[in-house]
Amino acid sequence: MEEGAEPRFTPDQSRQALSPGDQDEIALSRLVYPHWIKEGGGAVADPRLQQALKDFCRPLFAVSDRANLPWTVTLVNNPEVNASAGLAGMVIVNAGLLPFMDDPYAFAAVLAHEIGHVDCRHTARGTDMALLAEEARKQGATAMGDRALAQLMPELDGRIADFMTLMKNAYSREDEAEADAHAVELFERRGIDPRLAANGMRAIQRLEQVSGGGAGNEWVTDHPLTPDRIRHMERVAALRSRPAANYVLPGWDVLKAAIPTDPRIRKA
Image (cartoon, rainbow, N blue to C red):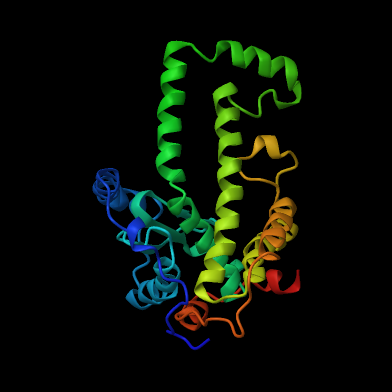
């Protein structure tokens, strides 16, 4: 599919009206986003890179469930390999992610995953969960759960703070799986082979291989294990339709010219 071509998918306009809750989410996001960028290391100063990232993301934002949100993305000076989505479609991408992305569709898959968190309202629910957890701690409501955790899973002693943290991690893993599946759907909508959505996790797996990272026990991380995520996305993609030619996302060449791929990833 040619660069800039319109997607076959057209969002259901009945889902696009902003509810009072959406409006509250947008108002809060506009207050929080500048602080989030600052804490993330500050925005990369090069306006050409910022525009290239926006150009790359715009076609993905356009096919989201919540396309009416004021979606925006900022490249920040942070060496960690990560991207995050906040309330109302406010996204940040760490500059440290790009050296480990040698494929535009792997990078697009990471971003589509973050879009999935917003579409599925995980951020808002996660904020509620954090507030509930804090209140539970204040009220001493987690003591029984902490004792049960120590008895049932002694191997986690010292590796996880308490029962509510474990519960929050389990909740987050469900969100991660849902966002992974949503990324596959967004690829189909955008006219990209859904099977390529797993490329993002394959890139993360290569990073784990060269760095010796990766979690040995999925109960200690808020993300499912990477091989499990790849298999899950492959199963979801097998049920989706494939385009005759993949949509070409703009801006990739500009991003990679400025931030080339780490040679270790190409060898992995």
